[in-house]
Length: 632
Image (cartoon, rainbow, N blue to C red; front, side, top):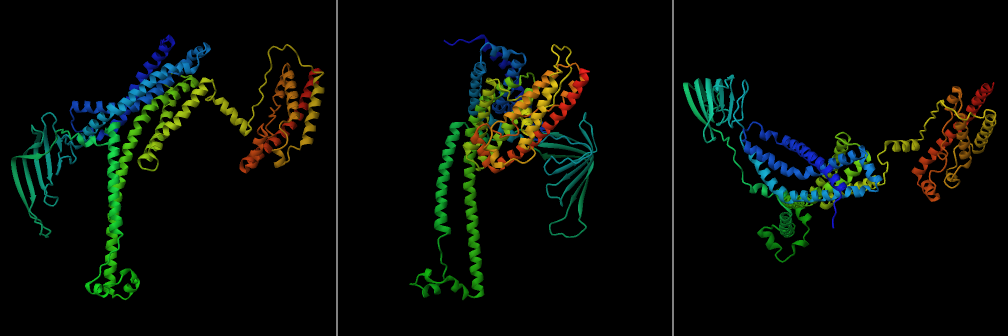
């Protein structure tokens, strides 16, 4: 029997509340981005509220699958970040509950979201995409509202240019009206100037009714064959003139079958049926084109005159030397042959180009349908992949709220979007295999999610900046400095009588080691990778140095404490082979560029070790002098 624990309810409840909020935030952001693409088709056209409501509703439905993965990523990051920041995650792990068990109820919930996303992709999305595409196409074809500005020419009315000096918005009167009627061409323009006027829309919203008062009409009378510079014109003065201009400002929905043929407006069954149909059509057309090209364009043809045919009636034309026939031909015959050959080659080229375009277009439509088929799975599965990235990241970062989680979520989603969009374009353009291009982003995110989940479950410091800084310092050779301070309470004072002898012994060992190893000289390249795994002498010197520093750090002398900080921190293994295993060192030595890098690195560390020995010797002398003053 399935038992739901209170902890599982608490985890799901914490995630669900955040998921609802982040989902609507992501949906709003994507809708604003989508709206910005079509702002030119919406502004200034006087669309009714019902049309705008349909636009926002269908666009929201199409953007739901894209909003779900980002919402899951952000919600999981914030949820587990809050758990870590409030030490709830630590308490769960202290109670013996692993991270995988904590994530289990949310993983089941996210699997349900994967099903919801797939349902929207396969059922709701195609219908909404077809409706939205039809609506956008209809909005593009709708004419803008007539809102004539003051002082500039208005050209939104087809074949007309209008300019007014002043407009009374309360009464609708227009003053100093200038109209250019260009329906008969620019040279035969009808120019109307009126002192005032009024413009209104007819009831059927198909025409503009124009009322003009106290004006003149100018019309050119220039005919097509008249070339005189002085063009006659006709002038008409009027006190009142009324005219009708065709202007369709009504919103008319286009046929919905136009967008129904797009790949994004089909479900999986329709996509599979369309792919099979296009493959069948492509194969049949391809076979037909092959037959036409092989039997038509590249079949030899002989255009001989009647006299030539009689001369070689029983001879095989292929036995004749064509070049010899061409050489003995007249100039007119050569020109005729060249012209005919060039024309035939051009016709063949055009024919092959047309057939190639048709086959390429059919292949492009097949790839678009295939990418859409795979896309229904990849976007749905990305919800689960983002969860296994966001949840462990939140447990590692341990920062809740909308600060760090939002930054990390945006970075992860941008990386995913770039990879997914690149793979999609490669698959769509035929540069990659369709399934490889569409599943590239999932193939990259899946190992990343597994790695982060594993590291978070093991409480690894995978995102600890100090660990990476220390590793970089170790590779480059940057060391920390000693930071010793005078202790407020000292229990055991240093043995000042015993210390000078220990310092002399340390100095002697350093000098002996320097004379024996000749650290400043370049080491033997081949001997370096085969001899010596551990330098016991340096380890012993370092242990003796640290023991003396620890003992002398209990002093009450500020001068002695400051002098102790001058001792270097010795890296006991930086000047020897980089790896503990013998075969790995041999392999590095054989690979010349890598081996050369480690060789110069080891040489530099040997020189630094020599300088460290000199610093130790010099510092020992200073400390012995300070101890003598303390004993006095």
